Length: 301
Length: 288
Image (spheres, each protein chain N blue to C red):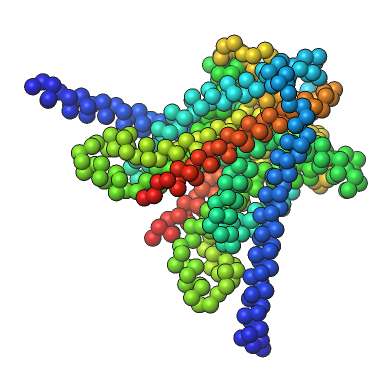
């Protein structure tokens, strides 16, 4: 008799434990995000205390290894800015146009094929694009634009633009795909063509999703590391325009982290740069997510 | 005033132009990626040999093969899977099947979306601080794989949740009506039905991790190392090897550079295409 009575009890208890473990895994993302914040802050503390956070963010000189060491982020911030601008100028129009084609004009089979292709595109390693950039793009940028070097923020930005394309295309396409069919058929019923429907109905309805796609692309572009490390030239000056060598925040961290003394001021300053980068991308992602969520809620009604 | 006929003609012309312009954008993107892959295949094909794939480098990287880098990347990716898959899939199951709607759920989702957007170099810093230094793992396969695991986690969670959401509610209700508990329904009915989507999404995430350089730069890799014997050894890895050889001042033989790029691209492509093909075949097989 005990077996009959005991088993369901045991099972219920076991189920409680398992469900608890499952919930715990569900919170892993929060835990990791919190841990990232904590470890970035702890390791930046020395630089924040000795140099000052605002002094670093607004500092114009980055001479981490000289006797009179200076830890200003402005050269890296300006480099990141130009790379991102070039990347978005390239990726935004082309990415949104491609998303319109995939969502509104492509047939079902072509659509499926293109979506798989975009998925694959996101998996092409950035070092490979960097390598091709060095061999194919850098010499051409130098000769075509008649510059001293082909390693410029512009060169890096072009390749970063290609890298953020899958993000922009897939999120924008998702947003257009999510526009309720009623809106489209209603527009057709009024005699609109596909393109008229697209720009009069679909694009306005999906506008916040498209905005989020651009924001997420922006976040990707700011954080992209290897391509800019390989192509942007890593110069120390503040670039007034994108057609000269520049360093970016991720590129600086990746390029110098391997050679610094652990626990030293330079090491700590690189963590502080990572913290700034993390905060910037966090805010961008947050905005994108809030916008997407609001749109989702409107359509659910 | 334009007549109705003129307006129709204009609308048709606009339609055609829009189709061409957006079509050219798609072709441009597809063409760029296809030519990247094609160029790598073209340049690298000549350097692929049995020796290149199975031997360690010799003569300061100018000769010999890249076996330690290949094996290093395989090891890193497998261990990344070992960390990211169990936690990621479980988290996805929680979000889709058990999580109560509410503020907490919203925060969890926000965190996952945000994790996916954290720059890979920041994961590298995090891995360095936590796994390499605080946990004392040193530069090692284990520290690198844990770092890559964190980076892959949001992809796995999203893929799992997406796949579970495709499963119709009727299936769950039928199982519950037969007296199965929610956990049993999830484990025996929902997860098997969603398996193709979960597996494919996870593999795509892992193939992205395999190509990452920045997170392992400071947590796992060495310019030259023998095949790692334990998880606490440093390792070579294909993306890092490629980075070093493409940028170091003393140029090694270009054969080695393009051959390495080919192996990396081919590996990632084969895994991707296989996973995507399998998923679309499974999708066609199951109709709800």
